[in-house]
Length: 169
View (spheres, rainbow, N blue to C red):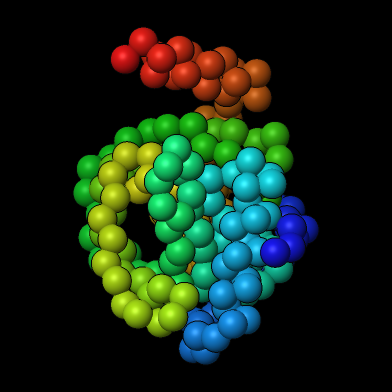
């Protein structure tokens, strides 16, 4: 597996709508493997193909903590519900964090690396990460959805507080 260079804003590829994947082969499998390796090395939660210079409808989400890696090929949002505002960041926008409103629930139809169709339902942080990556595939960047920019030091404090709350549970 290879760690790829992450494309940074304002690269034009980040604002393009990506092409549907029609060939499910070893090349697609390698792309998904390399994307995961790249995302982990960058300490990310998700990565979309345009973020590594490929304008195809492929994204991954990995929340860690023993959860399965979600591979999304040609994802389509089929339902959303609820709403919440949370702080987000993006590997293509180093150092930028902001409050973004997104649905609390999402249902997605997508294909696996072998072309098999599947349906996925997610809530809360997982739904947010999936929707963030699908936005990338449609050329929609999170900075266009920011309600309030959050200073990086404020973001770090929020993460520390959440970590302490998790330890208390």
